[in-house]
Every structure is written in structure tokens, then in C-alpha cells.
View 1 (cartoon, helix red, strand yellow):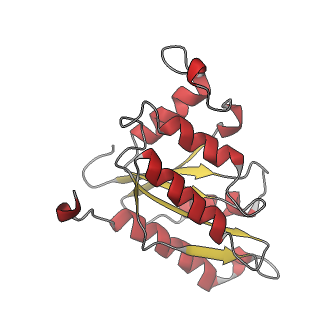
View 2: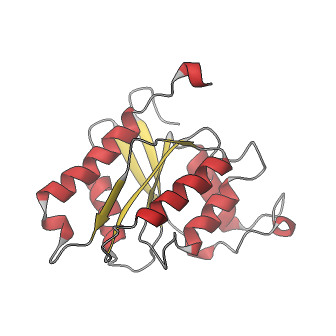
Length: 185
């Protein structure tokens, strides 16, 4: 957690390409985060082996320990991801698997979570984002259901489209300003 006046957001990136559209979206959110908001892209997800309970525990891989530490200190978690074959990339699912352990006490437990991104299909990544939200819910996160931003890639540069940029920044603002309903607890 950060200072009382600062909200930290850990970004789980579903694409490894250096110049991927979703990395560019994450970098934009980091660069244009509102005052009082710190956005950190969690690097190294490609170094984490697929979850296996035999690898976990006191000898968990260093990359998995780093992932858990980055999410544990964050106030919010945002997945920025494309869609692969109608679902989220395996690397994102694997990160959520590691974050869900130990069961009921994982680093993602109770964290407000949202998924956004873009993909070059007419569906805008809706299944990837839906599956990420579902998996994060099962892992113990508090999914912010009001944030649904499935943005297909446009002709040209999506990040040159001010309306698209404002939708991504609006989703970040909604995640940061989210407050759980005490009656739901």
C-alpha cells in the first residue's frame, strides 16, 4: 500500500511484445495517471513457470515471489490484455493462478480488479476481459463490474484517438475511485 493520499495500481500485462498495443496502453496509463495515482507495470510474467503446487511454498520461483510482492503492496490491480483465441493469454491466467495462492490468502485477495485492453478483432477483447474478471473473482479479487472497456483496434493508431485514450483513462479513474459496498461484505 502507498501513502493515504496515493493509490497504487499494479498492471498485469497480457502481451510481451515490446511495442504491443496493450503495452502502449499500459505505458500511457502510467504516464498520464492522475495526481495521487501510481501505476506500476509488473514485469517478468514471462519468467514465471506455469503454476504447480509442488513449485510453490518456501521455494517458490523468484519471479512468482516478485509478482506476489508487487501485487501485495498495490491498492488495485488492472489487467491490460489482448485476446488470444477467444480468451485471455495463458500468461495472464498463470499470473492470476500464482496470485490466488495460498487459497484465501493470496496477494490478489480482496484487491479491486479490472481488465481492459484492445485487440484487432470486432469483439474488442470482450471474452479475454470477461475471462480475466471471472478468474480474478475466483482467485479472491473484488472485480469492479462497472468497468467494461472492450476496445477493438482501430484503423491507424488507437492511442492517437483522443476518445479512446479518454476511455482508458476513465477506466483507470473508475478503478482508483472504487469503494466496496460495506453492506456486501
